[in-house]
Image (cartoon, rainbow, N blue to C red; front, top):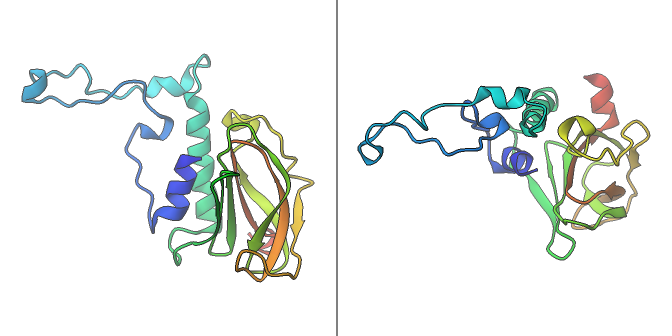
Length: 184
């Protein structure tokens, strides 16, 4: 979730260093005087994503899906995001960027049904990325095939319309207009 909020809210680009796309269990320290020019920690462990006993493969798969989704639907090279909701108690952040709707639930235990979020453009929205997918190590609590979100013409959070979504705990979803999805 942190990777997605950094990429989509941060700016015009997403910088990831080789090997960091799936995490790293140790620090990296390149040879220098302070460590007696040691190469011991100057190595990447690319084998981590292939070890089924570890969870690094999920980070790798999510990073890959996030970058593919951005390439397909685009948000990095567009105007900055409009943050319509930051609710500290609910631990929810909602924003729009290039007509994509980003919804994050950082709450450790609370899931929300019919959570109302504002959106500028009217229409039918569908999920294009969901951090809760089983392939990312999630719990697969959202049925993406059946999830369509229709706007209601009523101002909410300084946006012209709203939709109501199911947003599980510790989950992020990205929605796009159905018309845009069909044209891709």
